[in-house]
Length: 483
Image 1 (spheres, rainbow, N blue to C red):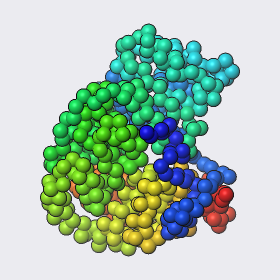
Image 2: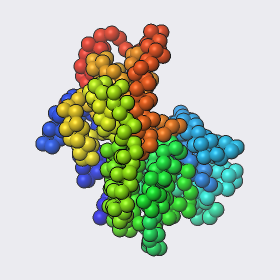
Image 3: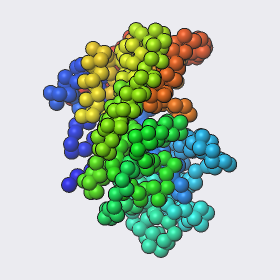
């Protein structure tokens, strides 16, 4: 039996590293020998908290209310999540737009001393009276975890007295893990415990696939993925973005499962396999031709649709590959650095090979068995590049970019743009990035930025970065301690 508590560093089936920097070939070599140092940073900057990912994963659930049991500052991530929620509504034609139903318990100094359980009880009563939801999610925080508020008991007592909503504690205290994807795991552990409850499977719905997708997937990408799978006779249960209690309960009735992002629901799919014998495909994000081919073949294999998938892939390659001829002319030989989450970084790194570009550097939040497979694949494609393993370390990123001097940066552009580099990214909730159709769109974005870098050059001319000139002469990884 698997015994996974939602902390990625402690997974029993893989070693996970969060702090390393150097050559990709050296990283792969040391990992294979199990000699990659379990390091730490003596200085860190801008870590992403796992609570953010728990909130982001669930905030768009229908008929739900959300309690953030934390000081007010911890709920700052909700503003970004709510913005994405409103964008998603607009794209889906859900007007008038509404805000997510969020209540913050606003723990203060007195609560740290005396406990915040009274505020949590009041928040639960308020959420019920104000919204009458089917689901109430309680997100814990570092503060509520440190002071020891018994969130589970309070939730159970309220549940017993009030059957109107299912009360779901999500244990996403930020201090538990340096890997922000642990926040996704916390959400799925809560769904498993409080909604699915290990109840017997009611029966399989043939042709139904659980499609687990993070909130960074745009509606355009959702509809494109649903269209692609529909072409080979597969229906989608899209979880959990803009999902519902009814869709969650259908999870155990699906024929199989897959995820758009490699780290979003990988641990949950393992649980579904063990408890309900639901097979899953775990390959790569479908960005670019080779990645979409691999992703679709993995799904087809477990859904009994291999013949249909191969015919569809052949048809798509004949249609879209000729369209990138001009893009290859514009992009061949251009050097890129890619920064993103684990799924997006490696998918983007394979994508640019479709255009004849060269990968010279990338960042990834972690290095584990799955990352190692992707790293080996990229080493074969590109012959080695600089890799930075870390959870949002802008100071290392800026130093690395200054030294590598790429032609373009692909990732969240704030820091690279202030160096004057052309920038674009594959993390875009408002525009299409996935599947065969969007290959040309992505390539055009990259080419257009390379050919029209004036805006970023003006940013670099008039903007400043918060780093001394001496920092650019240092090793970008000097603060990573080796043990």
